Length: 407
Figure 1 (tube, rainbow, N blue to C red):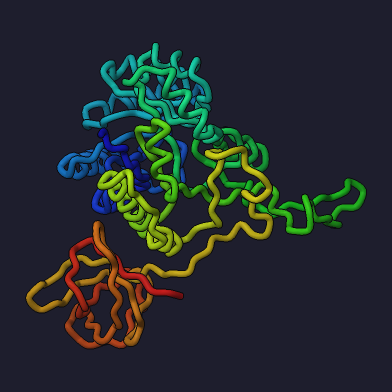
Figure 2: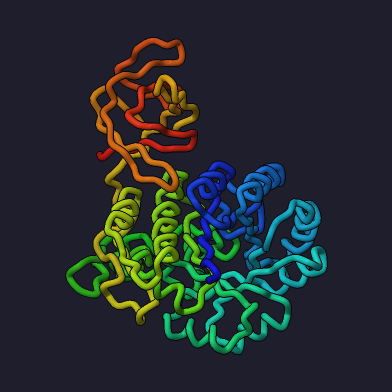
């Protein structure tokens, strides 16, 4: 049985390595231009080269997003950019604009091209159109149900792969093609600069009564009328595999390494458990518990089972739920002494109860009983950002493992 791919976001080089370490089969990232996440750290050509080498050494693939809708002034810079990066070993390119597609085929004739979700591909006839042009994977529009995906699979060639988002923020606009940000504050979502106005709180103002705000309500629940809940499909691994998908995609190039580690790890465990025994697979609530330990909104299944209803919107707030704090990452570990070198990410103090977790394993809990600064002096707390400390660990750890504590 061909195993479904777990595809993770890599907003910068550290997140790329984290995604690979925690079990991603592939990562997608943007360069310094022509990506729809201009606010992410993104990767320079040198960082891409390093990241691709890191991933390939560990059996993971690397996909570059070149999915803006290009304007005239983008064309020549795009040509130069693709020429500069064409020999880096990128496994595939995500494209939505037909002009960008044509330029990519011209400069990198043997490029594997994936059609971005921004192209809002929703039917088998359009899928065959892109297949005829050489696209070998389509990132499906988020507006498709399991039934529709199954029909696509049945009507398309086996070597045309389908990828779909399974976790992360949902865009209120059709397949993410939004004009709100551009209209309101001149930041073009289709060129990577979305300001997320769908998360803002809205009110109504009458022309002759400036300053008098009336709430915009569908009912008494509130005024965040465009604010979708986050997608979460970890409970439905058998259905995702069964409908014919080839790749499960996690949203979040703007999210932290802490987020990437948790989400990739949870889905990795769920997917692996399914392939170990498909007939008897059962969802484990501990996987969902892990997802709740990173910043998130309430969860929805999006369009997979039917069209979303008012239950899939959060009318009360656009704020994230953050119950746990990322406190540190292991940089070194001495198995003989049990001490680890920790790079601090948030304040810890003696007496804190922390959870320590890593890839392909369960977390363990311990109390912070002793800490030492770089000079080897005992300290009661580590309040300084990215402070290097030494700590006795209650269990064996490895570089890249993370520490967290409940707020």
